[in-house]
Image (cartoon, rainbow, N blue to C red; front, side):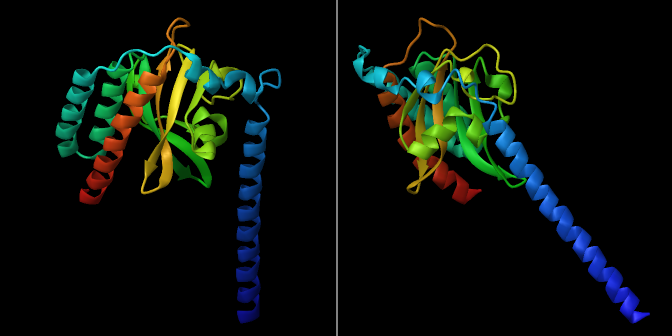
Length: 223
């Protein structure tokens, strides 16, 4: 009786092992399929326009407006990390005259890396808490390069898993650093061809993000 029981247990373990291997294969195949969905007629270089940022004329600094944003963030620190990020996105929307703004944080779910939208303001506000696979998002390029990037009509290259409406005409993204590690991105979006971001938009974004990152770390420790 015992030998038979042992054989059944071993058989059950073998089935579990096979299932686990199969699941990993399915995940790998799905990842490969998603990577291959990029449109070959639109390579990454055709939607990446970061070099244009340096040649664009910039708006004048608005110190009073930026200082008011810092004061607003100080109050937001009292309401926890998620409220802080959301307030940051709302301020970013205003400071950069963007149509949408947000914060994407890199997470892992079911063995896959993805970017979850922890904060969203503007036209895309209803997409908050949605996600995009790391390899199917401009955020992935920013995290990989650890550098600021500008994209023009990124949906022409990236296989977005959900339909974004209206489409993105231009997106300015910068790394979100925490303790020397890039944990995600902060970004602003234009949904109109005539609205293009400049170096003053980037300066405001990065200054506000540095303060937000320190406050975010403190808020996480308090939670």
